[in-house]
Amino acid sequence: MADENPPPPPKPAAPVPPEPTADPDTKSAADPAPTPVPTPPMSAAGDATAAAPKPAAPAAAAAPAAAKPPAPPPAAATAKPADEGVSRRSFMSWALPVGWVAFSAACTSSLVATARFMFPNVLFEPPQSFKAGFPGEYNVGEVDVRWKDAFSVWIVREADGFYAIIAVCTHLGCSPNWLPAENKFKCPCHGSGFYRTGVNFEGPAPRPLERARIVLSDDGQILVDKSVKFQEEKGEWTKPEAFLKG
Ligand code: FES
Image (tube, protein in one colour):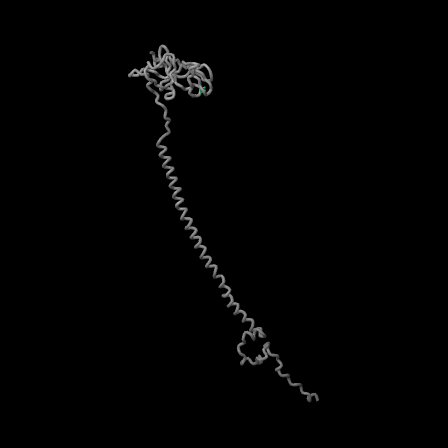
């Protein structure tokens, strides 16, 4: 009895659902032969295995496309060195002349300094000796000031002769003035006073004025020589050339 109910025949395997091909128009997945190469739209709908590799291709294709945009930078990069080159050229165009001008100025100043060195500093002083005219041109008892400005010398004529006083104060070297009304020499700097003989009597001057050599020249004129001086404190006024008899 039990054999009368044979086991139900196995269900056909047909109900196997078609592989995830969503397209109803396509034939079943069990028949691979006629299945054409899945097109991208189909795989995107249902076939996961086919869809996976596909996106890779577009990515690879997109990579070169994305790499293209960086192309412009090289253009800018090539432009910068050009600008730098121009600025460098412009810099050299004015820096070189300026450098030459500075170099020339330095050389010129050096030459001028060297030329100046060839001419040492010289103090031009009046000659130390001079002829002061004939003795008859002087009045007895007078201090002659005609040579003071030119030679810084007064010539004094006394009854028995002449002497020449150097017009330099023995204090600090100022030039005193002859004051006929007061019959004395007066220094304007610190007030030293000297008699007509040259002896100091007031102010800070420590000693009398100095006298210069005075003689008669060959032509009969009075010759004064300041290079030879006589100091009273040394007893030199009594020397022959410190006083010209006449
Ligand atoms: S320099 Fe003549 S008083 Fe001083």
